[in-house]
Length: 357
Image 1 (cartoon, rainbow, N blue to C red):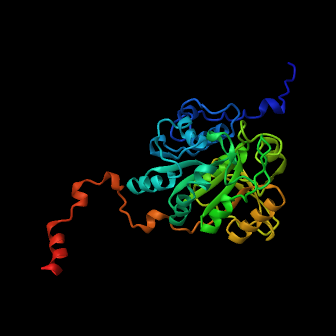
Image 2 (image 1 turned 180 degrees about the horizontal axis):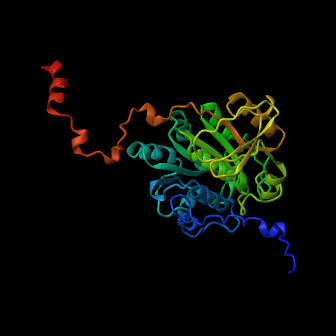
């Protein structure tokens, strides 16, 4: 009988097949929406794809999601994902105000607001600032292309000084950096990414859904029609050439706490709840501290001055108290209260009237 040799390849266990459904039993297809009507190649469509991935991977119930938007190319995009979810397309610049009313009425809804640089930094900058002051639980994605796409590509308030339009017109105004503004106002979750970077953007969106307060993600999203030419700081080529990653990002869904104690500079192997391995390396104090507001602002100012676009997690304050907690709302959503819940008993009314007798 001839000897049979088993190779390493034959004995190796087959790779585990990636599951076709998430923890809710839903497929990625279940998070899609209507076909996009935006220009072919628009960065906004890439963001839509990344939002779908984040919702699917996070296992968010479509029926427990509220999609909010204002006016603009960006504000059309909620129609292109999670068609089973609640949605409200508000008037120009008023998405944060309407979102506040929605969250007050039904605190159980997870809110995802999609806005643009015009909808946020121009007509809507007042509602944007007060949304942050109140720390409303809302994932706020800004699809930032630096132009007004619906009105033929004029400069927006976020466009860099010195930027050029296709016509040759040069922007003479200083830009509004929405990330720096959000940090100054006290926002407890601030990040920036690029529409063409799913490896960074998807984890940021997933993390934002788990943050107890306003989470602002400014996404550079090139406009292929009006702002993708030579001389534009928001073109695909320019962003790719000048993109500087602040750090490598990932997000792990909440699970049982994992304890790890090790020295600075040491690398430690950690097994995660899903069976994967995580290798932790404790950085030295010179690394970026996402809890340091001044370090975040300094990093933003320094890279902007050098003509580069910094992406990554800038600042997060996990101890912030959100708007709903400050309002002392009941656990039962106001939208679900019935007459017996809201009408005081006769004896309570009598006590209230006693001082006026």
